[in-house]
Amino acid sequence: MYKSKWKYPNEYNEKTAVIVTAHGMGSNYDDLPPVATKIDSQAIQLNIQADLPFGEGYAFFVPDFREHSEQEVIQPVLVAVHDYIQEQLAEQQLTNHPLIFIGFSQGAMIGLGLTYLYPNWLDQVFLFSARMPAFYQSIAAQNLSKTTSKTAMFISQGITDPLFPRAIGESYAAYAKEKVATVAYHEYPIGHGIHQLAILDAKQFYQVNQMEKRKNK
Image 1: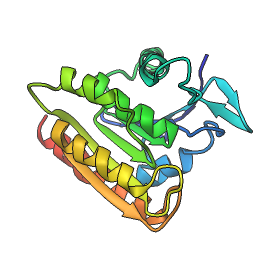
Image 2: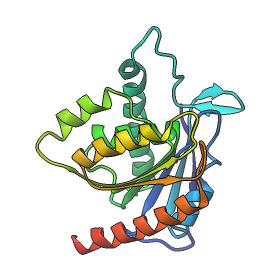
Image 3: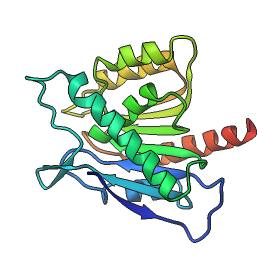
Image 4: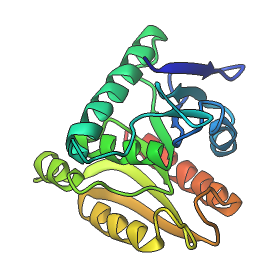
């Protein structure tokens, strides 16, 4: 069972965004709240912790695909994370608030999958150092065959990332631009991590798209 840690601003209303964070392998729900706060210090935060012990922290799934395919391993996790978030939002009576997702590494892979599996569920998704499993294309092709997702997507990739080289980021960003209406792809002089400039760019992207969403409502 996933665990979660909520963080509320002093004041909020029905227009206050809910930012969901999902960490990478070997980490926990204390990893990304500082990033979320820098992007929007007035948002409500739902920080999720994975359920599988891994290293000094946790993982949402173990990337061992020898006996089971990526789809068999990862897609049930996407469904479980989605359902868990929905349950948490319902308990807190926040289901009508703008919903933002921030993920790093494995958490970012989950954010990308959620964008394709549940079109337009997320208002914005921020993907730091991710890759795209091949089966995501079939999900996107099925769910976004006649339209594009309205989810605004920010992608950050490290130029010297040893786990997910920049070519991986370029490739899945190019595909995302076919399925998602608003995609921003950025590269930074960093390995497998989040550059400070990426956070500043993400904040600007967030603010612009929040304003656009309000104009169109």
